[in-house]
Image 1 (cartoon, rainbow, N blue to C red):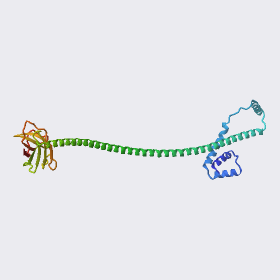
Image 2 (cartoon, one colour):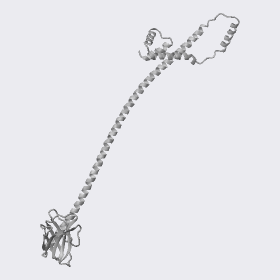
Image 3 (cartoon, rainbow, N blue to C red):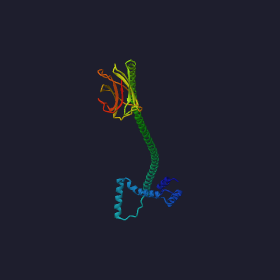
Image 4 (cartoon, rainbow, N blue to C red):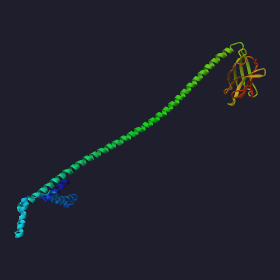
Length: 313
């Protein structure tokens, strides 16, 4: 039997209306020990005790009041035998008790329905709570996915930033190479121009070849100077000159008598080779000798360093 059915029988038991097998079974249930049913019976007895006080009092008719007062006055004159209450009054009291019992049964039934409704509400609430937990779990999973995607986006942003920096470096390198290529193109154009001018210079019959031999600091060095006395132009080719410190430079001198005139600065490669196109020299001088010395970087107006090469026309 469902325990709700035991509670429903407890209402009838409290009214004394339970009998037969149901009474025997219910008392056996109580004897077995059921705290909930015992507590429920206690509350039901308390409710039955308070129920008459909850009924609204009704004033008796005035005729009954006069009859009762007259009877009391007669009893004070002479004792009367005990008069039994009419059976109708017991019937009225029985009706009142039955009315109270009906009210209690209706109240118990209402409580039973309310309890059943509460159980259904609890079931609905439990289902809603389970659904809410599922939604919260889904929300947590979505938050974790969002955090994972944010981490992926941050990683991609870092990778993109690194690639942008690498592309910027490559672009800068390409730009530097482009500038260097432009410089080399200008140098090549200059060399071509100088080559053409040198060829024109060397193609004239006035060109003289001056051989410069190595002196004490560089005995193994030598040079050839193609010199055009009429145009005052020339080209110097060296070989075997030693490399000198970065703060020093080779300087060519065109010498007229005993007065040297600066004729250009140059550096040599690892083999001591150099190519120098002489600038236009003064036409007021007649140069008969050429020499090479090492001087401070930037050159000097008069020789101060050691002489490495010397040659005469």
